[in-house]
Image (tube, rainbow over all chains, first blue to last red; front, side):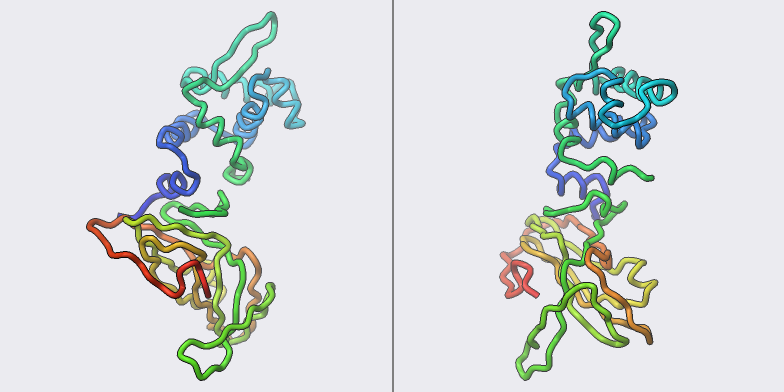
Length: 117
Length: 138
C-alpha cells in the first residue's frame, strides 16, 4: 500500500499522529494565507492580542483583516486549538495545552511554503 | 525518513526529490565507469546521459520500499529518467539517470524536480541490505 500525503509528511517531519489531526481541524475552518500566518505568528509570540499578531506581520490591524483573523481564532477556540483570556478591554490568545505539538510544528515549519499564493 | 525536505515538495502520494548535483560518465575499461562531477546549471546535450543525486537524504524503515518515478515535468521537457527502487534500510541520497531525449540541449538546474519518490509499506520480513551504493554514492 502506498503512503499518502499525511503519512509521508508526518514521517518526514517526525510528527505525532495528533499533529496530523490538528491539520484536519485547521483545514475544515477555512484557513487562508493570512490566517495561517497569523497562527504561526501567535506560535512565536506565545501569548498575544490579534492586533499585535497583525502588527508583527505588518498587516492592517483594523477592518476586514482583523475580523478575518478574529473569526478564525474564535473557530479555533471552539476546536480547542486556542484559548483566549479577557484582560480589561483586551483579548489575549494562546495555544491550548492540547495543541502544544501543533504550536511546536508551526515554529519549525515555513507556513508560506504550504499556502497556495 | 526524509532529511532536508522542502514542505512544498510533498505531493498527494509522493515526494518530489530535488536535484543537488550531477556527474557525467567517463569512458572506462572498468565494470563501472568513472564519474566526473559537473557544475549546475549544466547544458545536457541531445542524447547525453548523466547521473543525478538528490538534495534529500533518505533513511528507509525496514518495512518500507521506495519507488522513484519520473515527474510529468521531466517527461514534458524531454528528459528520460532511469530509476528504480529504494530498498528497505537504505540510507543516503537518491541517485538516478537523466538522459536528454530531444534534439536540442536542456539546461539542468539545481533543485529541479525530476523524480517522484513513492513509498510503499510491505508485509513480511526482509534481509539486511548490503550495497556498494549505500550512503548515496553515485
